[in-house]
Image (cartoon, rainbow, N blue to C red; front, side):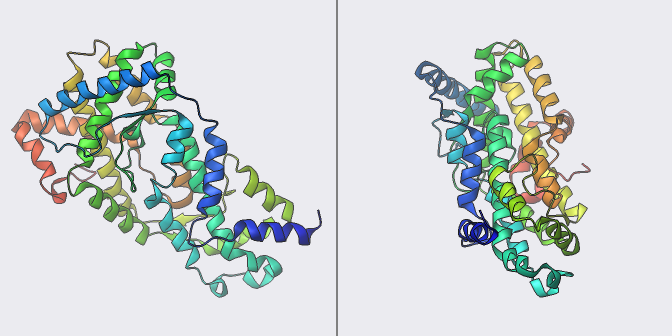
Length: 357
C-alpha cells in the first residue's frame, strides 16, 4: 500500500470527537480481554448467595450505608471489560484534555515535522484511547472484582466479581475455592458500602482533578519522539497492535508529589479499611483467611500493568501496597480510642487520614 493510501486510512480511523478515541479503546480492550466465557449457572448462584451472607456480616460490623445496587454480578473477563470500558475515565480523560489543549505552534520542532504536524490533533485522542483500552484490557485479567481495582467506577455502582481470576487466585495459592468466593463477596460488599458514603466518590473526583491540575506534559520530549515515527508503517503498527507500551513511551509528564500523596492516601485508606472490615467479618467463617490475606497483600506489591500505564503516562502511582499501612492505622485508632472513633472517619472528607498518618 502506498503512503498516501495508508495515511488516508489512518486519518479515517483517527477521526473522533473529544479528547479520547473511545472507539479505538473498545477495540483494544476487546482484543486483550478475549472472547466471552459464560459462567456456570451453579457457580454464579453460589456467588450471589454468598453475597447475601456477606451483606449481613458487613452490616453487623460497620455502620455503613447500603449500596443501591446490591445484586452481585459474577462475570467473565470479557463481559467485565465491556461493561467497564469507560468506568475509569476519570483517570484517562484529563490527560487527553491536557494533550488536546497543547498549541502546536508552541511546540519546539513542530515546523520540522512536515505532513506529520497535521496528525497531531487526531493522534492525541488515539494514543489516549490506546492507553484506556489497554488499561481496562489488562485489568480484566488481573482484577478479582470491582474492589480490587482500588478505584470507584464513574458510570455505575454495580458490584462484580471476575470468576476466572478468582479461580486462578485460589489455585495459585492453594486455597479452597469456596473460601475465596466468600472472601471476595465480603470484599465486594464492603467496597460498595464504602462507596455508598455520600461524599466518597466526589472526594475521589476532586483529588484526581487536583492531581491533574499539576500535570505538565513535556512537549519537547513529545516532539522528539514523534520525530522517530516518520515511517507510516510504524504508526499503523502502533495503533493496530498496542504492545506492552502502546504509546511507545510517547507521552511523558510531571506532577506535584503532594497532590499525588493525597490521592494515594485516599485509595490506600479505602483498601485498608476494607481489608480490616473483611478480616473481622470473615474470621469466624473463613479458617484460611490469614493465608488468603497474605496472598492478597503480596499480590498488591507485585507489578501491575494497568497501574504501570498510568504511572508511565502521568506519574499517577496509586501504590496499593500501602493498604497494609492503612489497615494498621485503623487497628491503632480502635486500640486507642475505640470503634466509634474510627467510624467518624466517614463523617466528612477532612476526617480521612493523610499519607504520613
